[in-house]
Amino acid sequence: MGFAALLAGFFLTGCEDVIDLETQTGPRQLVVDGWITNQAGPQTIKLTWSASYFDNTPAKPVLNAEVVIRDDRGTIYEFEDSLGNGQYIWQKAGDTLGHVGRKYTLTIKQGAETFTSSTEIRRVPAVDSIVYTKEKLPFEPDKGPREGYVAEFYARDFVGEGDTYWIKPVIRGKAEVQRATSISIAYDAAFGAGAPSDGLIFILPLRQSITTDSLYSAGNQIGVELHSITNEAFEFLKQIREQAGNGGLFATPIANIRSNVVNANPAGPKALGFFGASAISRMETTIDPAKARPEED
Image (cartoon, rainbow, N blue to C red; front, side, top):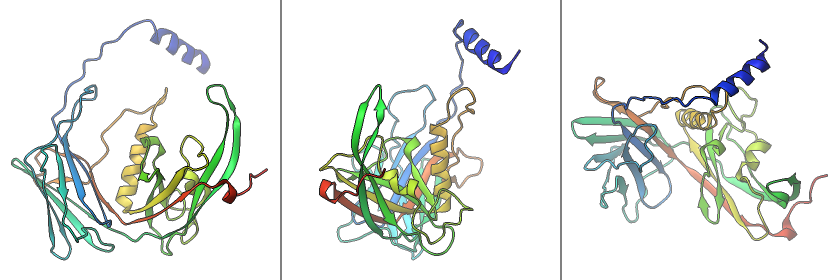
């Protein structure tokens, strides 16, 4: 039987029977969603409990935990869950938690378990400019003719190999990633290690990654946030993007992505999630047709 016939047989037989899968519920695990920055204002560490794969209910918050961050100069930052929703917040008027060049250790005490994780805030280049070009995209049956603006930013990677970044579009004043498959990360000024991109301007696909699924319109407020991240965070985000796009006939089994949060007791329950840190450079603009670059032929 040829390969094409094998695939056809797979789909035909796959539609005949309903298969009920009996899945085991694994142990409940601590999930850490923590990312500190060098920006002034409150910093948040969100703690929830893991759930089974087919559980669509909201994640349950982790309550009554002790959450602190200590930097490499001995300063301690205490986080409080004042609303009882699992979001542990540090806030102190006139103070900033994150600083470029410093290292930070997160400690979470929950019940009898103690979890720790360490990270650092690395340098980030300034965003030089944002430009936009008017373009017409081909007709699509579900979208019709499309015309609008493709935006891109310009920034130059630092000299010295191994700088890694997370590029986020800013739309209407808010930096947001619409879905995991659109995570845009850079190693030096390209997609990954090994490319001769150290110290160069970010490559075109990365520069244009701030243009989301739809073209922008005149008058839209757009921008970019460039986050410095560690190499460990780069790999974590890359795996999230790969898992989110893992589908189709040849998809690999879904697995938990390795966390950088470690239980002090090697025999104790493991944690999920990630603790990271970033310095941020940001630029915003409003699309003005009079300032748009001419459409390329």
